[in-house]
Image (cartoon, rainbow, N blue to C red; front, side):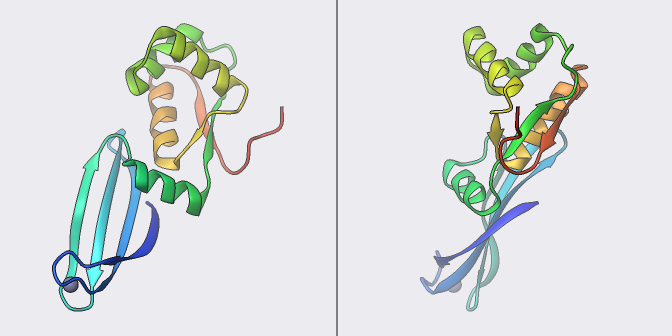
Length: 140
Ligand SMILES: [Zn+2]
């Protein structure tokens, strides 16, 4: 679980509370949650779900942990196979999938770790070797 912590106003008493939010790959999809801990009201979950990470959480995770890159380990993996997975996971047109494939091959496809890990998992399941590269954009 990649998490971020930040202060929020408690929804119940309006006091100072600590929010712990994060996303992780679970069961082949991204699961995310916001948990809050208030000194007065105690712990509670504000929201949780699976699928696309909410934009604000995504931005916080990227700011805190930085992006990871998707890597294709098997250059011979068929473009059709990869694009099929991309369209199933990300939606969009065939042209968009093709553009994303180009971005991945150039080492420029990055996102929140849980998202990229799930995408790599889907690609491996489809027979296209893929993994996650930490840190800044790899050379080449
Ligand atoms: Zn409270």
